[in-house]
Image (tube, rainbow, N blue to C red; front, side):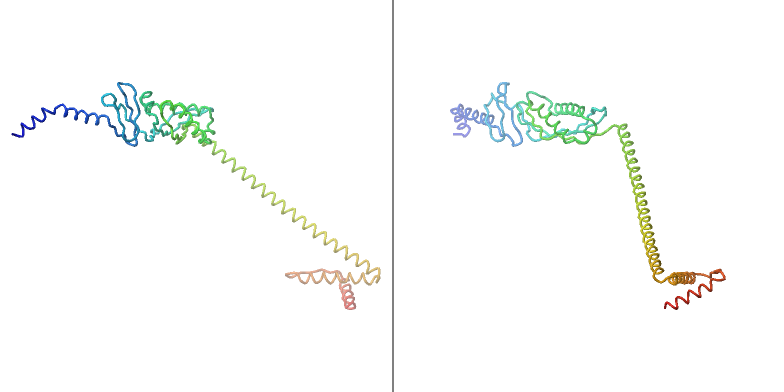
Length: 297
């Protein structure tokens, strides 16, 4: 019997079983869904939400259930956005922001919002303008961390109904318009000039104080020297007075002779040629002085 006839008889007798086997294979192939680790599948049954398939092997009802949306659950970053805002002290600033988010409930996201990135961008822009409008320029620049926290918190509340989690929100830069930058630069230069003047004035004041202290010290030392000299002269006068009281006129003459000799010695120690004019009786006085000193010796 030819092989063609055998096959024809076999398929003719078992056609129903073969069709049933093919149908089962097709159903199995249509009912098994393998979901990647980084995605979730949204399944609809006859046009209505049926379930959300997580990573791994999943089974659906063939021909009734259909995977309508394949949603990535990886963290995403919105492109950097720039928007204008006005502070409470009427300064125009340009704020550059960046937001990171991920979809955690895709059944909410796919049925409540069409353009996720656009919706989040619009939400962030409105919140940034609102928050900056409550702050002065100095507060915006000094308290950027607080501003970031406020923006992230409010954005997270707004997008929670969309099944989205905001993981990070950053304010990358706060730029000023040209007029404001020039005004701030002038203010900065004026402040630097003022500080330089204050520093110079303090230096001059310190110099005057040091000079005054030096003059006061010199005056104190001079007064101390004068006081010591006066004490010495008083002591010498007292000694002479005692000597005169004890030895009479001879002691006084001896002191006079001693002073005369000291004066001549100072004249002799002087530099250069010196001419000294003495009275006629000076030589007799000096002779008497030397005689008295000789006698004392």
